[in-house]
Amino acid sequence: MEENWKVYVNGEIVPLKEAKISVFDRGLQYGEGVFEGIRCYDGKIFKLEEHVARLFDSARAIHIQIPLSKEEMKKAIKDTARANGFKNAHFRPMVTRGVGLKLGFDSKGMNKPTIVIIERPIIEELYSLQSGGGIRLAAVSVRKIPACCFDPRIKSLNYLANILARIEAQASGADEAIMLDIQGYLSEGTSDNVFLVRKGALYTPPAQSALEGITRQTVLSLAKRGSIPAHEALLSMYDVYSADEVFVTGTGAGVIPVIEVDKRPVGNGKPGQITQQMIELYAEEVKKGEPF
Image 1 (spheres, helix red, strand yellow):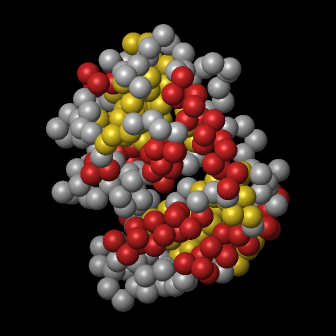
Image 2 (cartoon, rainbow, N blue to C red; image 1 turned 135 degrees about the vertical axis):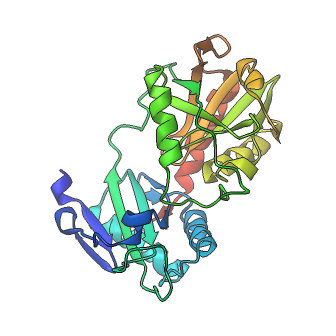
């Protein structure tokens, strides 16, 4: 039960009901902070090194100095995992600029970031799929913020555009959104990267307009290992509609087949052969995680 969950807050691991931060925290006030999503499979934390590295890169990009080393952050995550004891779980380490009692945008002199690590057990996968099933996508009007305004590689606490995109997609009857960049090219989903399969090859948008997903990179590496041609390319909705297969990738959900886009069936409306191959390869890859 949730009341037994443990949370890391600024160096202490406490019961969930005792986990508190200030209402003046800049993460709450302005979304000033960064986070990561990390999965644990059968007692092994997957790609912990890469996720912690990206957390530090994101923090540095928005001028937050994390008061822990990378090894100390890894230890804090593992300590939280041991305190909870969940074999299959989803972590979210978050770092904010800290408490600012003087309201306003001036962050001068703030040097005590807030660090929180939450963990929840995975009982069902984020997308619970029937055998041979998949999810439905819809292209939405909410556009991805361009890199000239805010670099998409920064995994910040401000996901409002993604949330609005998901709301719009679900209002149309879809499960997830496809977000386009301001030029109309394919960017990503709200919490995942998008892959297409055409004539036996994989295609995904370049990371210049999308999060440089760790699962995305894992899939590209697995494709190379499986002798599947893989390309980063500018893609339009035409490419999506005419694709033989579509799937999305993300740390939370792994590799998820897509069976419909904008009311159009993908291929024959069932997960395709390469999608199934990537699901199987990824399922083997997550076994290589780091024990806590």
